[in-house]
Picture (cartoon, rainbow, N blue to C red):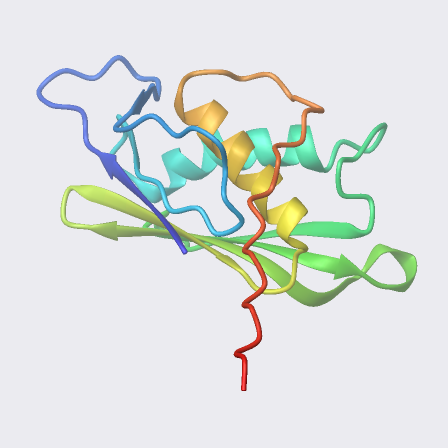
Length: 160
C-alpha cells in the first residue's frame, strides 16, 4: 500500500496544485511505499492532478500503456472523497475485475491518498509507482520507461 499526504496551502493560494517530494525514492521495489505532499486541500484537487496524468499517460486512446485495462473514477458530490479504480478490460471495453485502486480521502486539513494493487503484475505495479514518483517530483510527461522490479530471492530448502 502506498500512502500520500496532501497538505493544504498555508495562508495564500496560487490557485494551482504544486508537487513537493517528501523523500527521494531510488529503485522501485515490487511493493513500494512512499509519501508525497501536494499543496492542495481537497481530494478532488489531488484527483485532478494525479488522475489527469493517469488518464493521459496510462490510458491514452492512441497509445495506451495498459491496453488490457480500463480506468474508472468515482467522485463524491462534495469532492471530499475520490476513488480511481483500474479494471481488467472485458468485452466491448467494459470494466471487469478490479486490479488497482487509488483512494483520495480528506483527513482534517490533509488529503490522504492510498493505492492498493489487487491484481496487476509486479512489473505493472512498479511502473505505476515509478510514474507516481516522477509526477510527485514535478514531472508531467508520460514516460515509456519501465523500472526494474526487485525480485525477492527464493528461500533455500532446508537440509535434512
